[in-house]
Amino acid sequence: MSAGQPEDGAQPEDGGQAQAGGRTARLREKLLGPAVTGGGVAFLAIGLIDAIGTGMYLAGSALFFTKVVGLTASQVGIGLSVAGVLGLAAQPVIGWLADRWTPRKLLLLLNLYRACGFIAYVFADDFLSFLLIAAFLGVGEQAVFPIYQALAEQLAGADGRVAMMARMRVVFNVGFTLGGLLASIAIAVGTREAFSAIVLGNAASFVAAALLLSRLRLRNPAAPAGQQAGQKAKKSPLRLVALRDLRYLAVAAVNGVLVLHIALLGIGVPLWVSEHTDAPKALVGLLLVVNTVLAVLFQVRASAGTENVAGGVRAMHRAAAALVGACALFALAGSDLPVAAVVAVLLLGLVLLTAGELYQSAGGWGLSYALAPDHSRAEYLATFNLGTSAQFVLGPTIVTVGVIGSGTAGWGVLGVVFLLAGALVGPLARAAEKRPALHSADPQPEPAAASSA
Image (cartoon, rainbow, N blue to C red; front, side, top):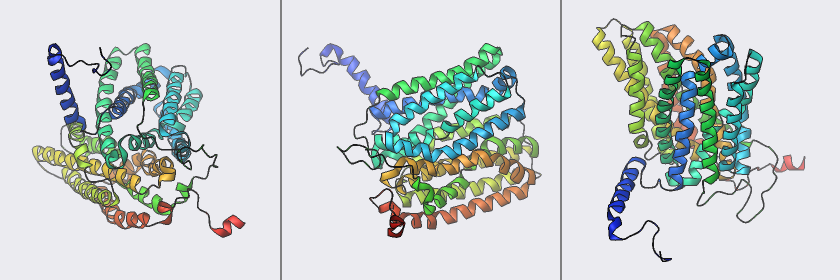
């Protein structure tokens, strides 16, 4: 083969292979978009592997902890709550590290870190060992997604970063589903070894993701914060400037309110349908399937036009409106209606809840990117994710006690809260867009008086 000849060949006898390759490329472009090539495909493959392992764990972890480790349900809840609080506190620090070490390197380390934690679970034999391992894992678990987000921007650029995150969200949904199916096989077997395989499979997925990350090459990787091209990295102290950026935190808090759709889907809707409506209990599974299918089909489309502040605010307005409508329909489903009407109302409510989920995700990505300064991008993205992480800590209580426990009135109050969040996001985002920290080239600007002191 000559030096100028392509490796895949261009001879007539290979025409069939070339046509097949062209069809594959066109199919990939149709599914993933024209900009998702090379590193983008590898990035999505990493997310798929991660999600398959996580889906296995989520489906089988409760049974593993109770049947294999021998914990009570309350002990599992305490341990995971401790992990959640630690993860909440550690996120800005991990984001700060990603700015200094680059998101790819830190995400690789986080995957290996998580693999070690889940392998250790297999050796846990009492509550104390479980608690220590859960705390160890909690420090790194919740920060993974904003680091993915920072890496997506380096791969796709400012114009394609939200679309890349939307595709990653689709990949996550597919992976969670596949992982759940794999876990169901182990659950059906029901032995200690089968339940342990679920946890070890999750650990293996993180090792595989780390190996792929080690081979991922960025065309134009961003320099770590405070470092210009060609310069050595500066050893700047841990300052966590994002936590002192009150306008950015305000937008993150409003986003955290709208993120309550996660607790509604996972906890609120199943409880409401099974205990407060006349719908058949089997409808719960169907509603979750409908949500997954709609998310896979429409997440990328919902993210269109959300790359800037105006587009992000517009998506958040749509999310708030959809969530308010969903609350109204779920409340209506609890009234005295024929069973067929209840089922129809619940399905429509689930569609609106999914629309709120898709638009909130897209709007949240757009605003978190657009309002984060370049010099501390990963730290700001991790700080923005605090609203989502707080939902995992507070959301179950808010939904079970505040909404489901209060009946129709609870849905009404939640709808008002969503309405207020939608009204506030625009003014807060515009105020954050004008703040000096966003436009300053200095990652740690200080007043003159503070410097002299």
